[in-house]
Amino acid sequence: MYRELMKRKSVLMISFLAALAVMVGSAPDAQACRPAPASILQHYESKAKVFVGTVRRGLAEEGAFELSVDESFKGLSPQEKRAGLVQVSFAKTMCGFQPKLGERFLVFMNDRDRVDQGSGSMYIWRESEQADAHLNPMIDKLLVLRRMLQFGKDPRIVPVPDEETAVHLAMKALIPIYGAAAVAQSKPFVAKFNERGSSLQERRWRVEGKKSCNSKSKKACRGTFVVEIDKWTGDVLEISALTPLGPSTDNNSPAP
Image 1 (cartoon, rainbow, N blue to C red):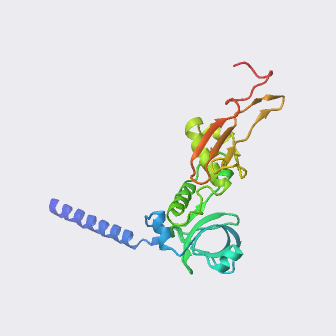
Image 2 (tube, rainbow, N blue to C red):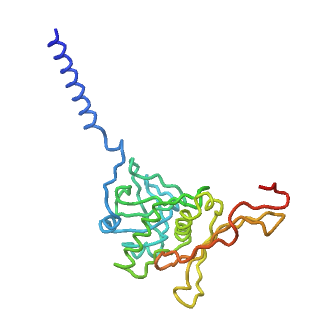
């Protein structure tokens, strides 16, 4: 009796393990997205065309879109450079994308590719659209790519070419010092580049947070931040708070 019971248990266990192996082995790739690990340099070298673009319109072919070129790194044809437009076919697998008008992507592709995350391509969501002080790690990867190309391939490429990157670096510098809540209160940040500086050191990004003052007392303001950033290196040069940090007060406010 005991031997028969153990034999039945062994048969059941073997059957269960065999069924489990079949289930795992036959699971379709579309059930999970596991992009092959690769550095941004490997993605760059493995693809013929690399650029940052904004989705402008959908095309007749399923998954195909026209992107305006925000930043070109490699491989655009003379026609694409003149028009500033590239046609991209996005894959609709689990590792693919579902682009919407106005969204931005860093694209690594060959002609006739169906672009997905496995290519290294990335959706670049906008930090300015977030209520909290969320940092987009994709912008850091884009910075790595720019620095890599600047020092190794094309010195004309700069790490901080636009307002979005400047604001990202400013928030990244401010959050460890003042906290995410204080930085979120200073949004939206505005970045302006000083074109009139007499030297490269003086031609820098100035990123300034929102200044919120009490309507009854112009002197009672919430603190706002100013961060100055080197366009050519991405270094943070200076951080300051223009007004005392903390909540605004007036004569009608209760004493602490």
